[in-house]
Image 1 (cartoon, rainbow, N blue to C red):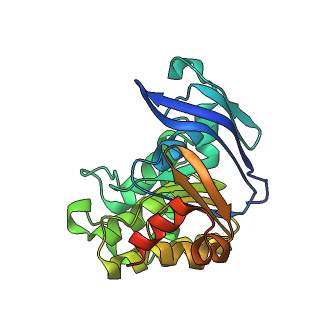
Image 2 (cartoon, rainbow, N blue to C red):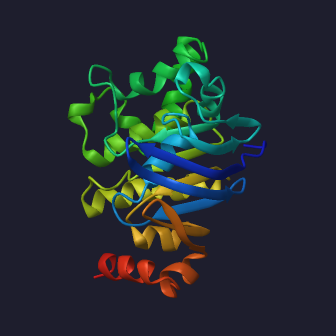
Image 3 (cartoon, rainbow, N blue to C red):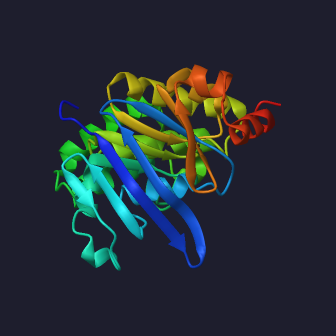
Length: 251
């Protein structure tokens, strides 16, 4: 994690048909920073994450991830840097997206073997270390259907880390979990934060944003309306839309 992973989002606009999802969004995330993206549903938070690692194309603007630049493209075939960006930033999804026919350790080994061309022995060793780190060494041979939601999400985190990224994009990764299981996953993220990874986290967990993020960014209607430290944004919001959102979340 010695190389810097800065993210510079400049005037990014994204439409789905006639619907404007991201409206001239600009945001800088420093290397090693943990940023929580919060805001109402439909604000564009998940779309922004997917634009950062090239899963969604955007219509205007520019995104720089480390040394790589993403520009508006008509097709993914014309976006040569997307693959490189995904090596820098792992992405973890709300619905886990584990391969159901593979065991936990096989899920983690798959990308290092197929993309990094690691030997089976090296990939296995890396996967076991990561499973131990997320507290699941004893579940290496379990299939996804044999794991709880929290365990599946921890395997998904280990799978992302198996590619040795310098940052993680986390898209509502605790929203489908019970409170106790949420704690399991959030504790793993806090551990990774201490490693100096750059973390951009879309979350409705206001308590986690307050505890773990160095900065909280509020999106509403496709725009960034407020940004600051957790104490500034969560405890003393300035914008009426932020106050309205937080009043609903903190009931």
